[in-house]
Length: 323
Image (tube, rainbow, N blue to C red; front, side):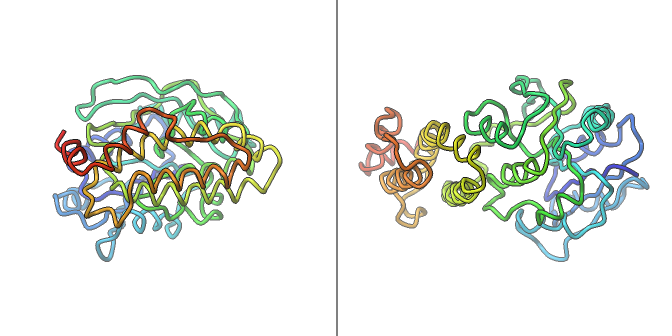
């Protein structure tokens, strides 16, 4: 077999049945499905045990694992030459592997592969297509696209060689895996380039609760780890350094806006002393670390300034959390 589709899951509900059905509908048959079952309590484990299909292997966790620990298991399992990872609520089109196989044949020296896709809601209804991606991108172009928010970056749908995945140590250990996929894709792309198929080949599911699925503190921690990663690769080449200095301030402003508003949704007693003002001071430090000569002022962003004002006033803060 040529391909392994890897599905980590805990409490997949009814979504996992649709996900597995979409995988088994592939027009190509040279693949297997490896499910990393993580002590589900909703019947997922029992349903998986009752599937009688030689293409599917279920590897159950010895104990209840964190999401980071469960995804880390990918490096320790036997895999085919190419792998792709999928969330239990996402769906592959029946031609996904066929499209990727054609793409690999067209770009044999690429190290990361992707296809265009669509967003669907919790009920499976179409929301919008993903932002367009170039057929071929270097690591610097990929980084520039991410920092400019020029395409939608998620873990599902990417394909790479198993040996490259294992050589990188698998997906990095970020809190709730936030930003972890970008670091992995960037490191793999640096070995060659990223190739993308024009044809839509899978669906990524957006839930109403997607933006609230990770705690605000974990988002803050992951963002700090992501900044440290950017600083580490900045030293690796003049081209990467130039891209970061050119686009990072805009990227930081957008994230400062989002993270400051996430923070004021978190009750003060759960923040471990973190305030919006303290986060914005930290964001200024991030700007100085990566772009020494900058004019970054997060308070110049009206919505950020408003978030800081709300956070300083206990009554306004409580009213905001009641929205």
